[in-house]
Length: 414
Ligand code: GLA
Image 1 (spheres, rainbow, N blue to C red):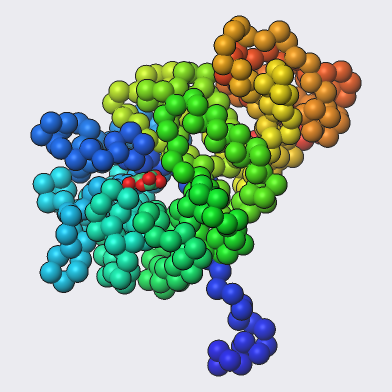
Image 2: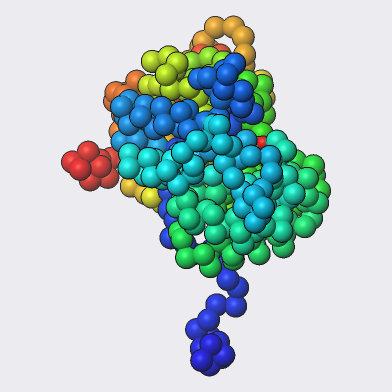
């Protein structure tokens, strides 16, 4: 029968990932960036990777409105298991830190309205030295299904990056065959891009993964964030077209609310992640976060840009080497444009006003209603003549939505 359908051309020749998941970039909370490898619960009871941390985070995500804003995946990164598998080869959660076991934790997470994510690594050990998935793929997938996970981040430490071109598709097929819809987050191209080993095969990656890390780890600092933004701008022609519903480039977690970014820099990360259609994965202690950073993470108008259903990744459309001002723009489903003006100059005072033309902003000429997405107010309409004035703080951002006048009623009468 299969052969018959095949001859009729009804069976696709390539098996593509079609799990119907992540139609907009995944949003959630993940342990790694803030909590790393902290496992000593006696010394650091509030910081250690444990069921208490996950439960208190779940509670807080609900209480403070993050879940309602869309942050729905709760993901445990590395360092959750025991250092050895059971005698029958199964992964076991650390018995002190995850006393109730993974299924009970998954039930708690699901009962609060979240989806549950976990981490593994395609090698004998994980990046932090816990048992890896190599040779145990089927057993681990069976555990993941039993624990009812909804998202898997599969890392690729300690494996030849060239092998990833076959390893990930093979694993992806197994994951699909499990029958459980699981968002598949791959680190595949990150290991090929970072060490300049080869240009990743993004066609195959997009056929296998829902999202994929394109770079090494982000760190909680402006220097690293700024490099990530540069890299995206520099490589956008190669990577942006691969993004779309169900398949996203992943520049790594949001570091907002931790130790390294100023408020302006945090606003830059949120705006650029929105333009880049990047997954929004928070990694912060929600009990400690300062209110102004929380407001950045919960800015519904910015989230709306990130989650736009057209799923088109935005681009850097302007870069001035002298002033260090860049313009990033993303076309949205309602025919409006989200446009971020960022200044990468890291000293001095806010710039004198710059006046930008349609050409510099790569905006189709016309008349626009303009909304400031951080001030949450309308600013004077723009066009069809003249220039658009913007004044930016050092390492700061102004983020606007340009709504063409002819769609204004459609948009605002919703
Ligand atoms: C790698 C990944 C990180 C994190 C750690 C865990 O460095 O890139 O995101 O998952 O491993 O050990």
